[in-house]
Image (tube, rainbow, N blue to C red; front, side, top):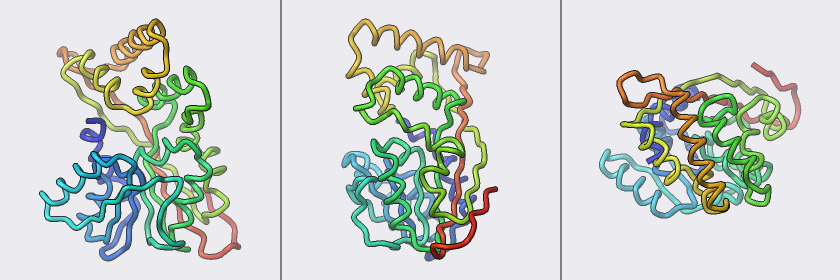
Length: 256
């Protein structure tokens, strides 16, 4: 439900990374397969990994329906079950940024990408609608739940800390995706049921605080809504990240 409006993000990311036929591609935290399928449409040899078996099964059905060959495997972004330098390209769309240990997840992403290969990410930014919502979730919850550092993936300084030392080029491009819904209530209901950090917050917060959070979500959507016909149209900012893995351990990094 969360990924359905975000297909365009995956398509644009694959174009920006400039995938080529026959490249080996890993999609980390693939979910229902948006980015893995986008890479497969470009005739790459694609593997998608995710922690949630039900999402992987949906991804397999989507691949079958399109006649695409993708290997979908259950796996953890913090412990990728692949040898070093297994892939030409490593991708993640609103996925790896939710790892509880960002340093370990970043290290694994870099480890499985071959020297000279590419890493492409789409990450929410804390100034945008979804990112500011996630930042608010993180503020409401204890650090032990593993959400306190997710927004590091959305700005240059955080990305420098996470992957900067291991890449020779790092580019960040601001992007916006449009989220649509029948009503404010339906969008909020979807966030509460399907957006993982919000689900975590609802489970962890006392009932009274959950109600305040629900009211805050309604206010946020109403304030961000650009539609004038009773429906909902919300623009949500994110950053498109493309990095080139160092070919060796030397040489200056070029920031773009």
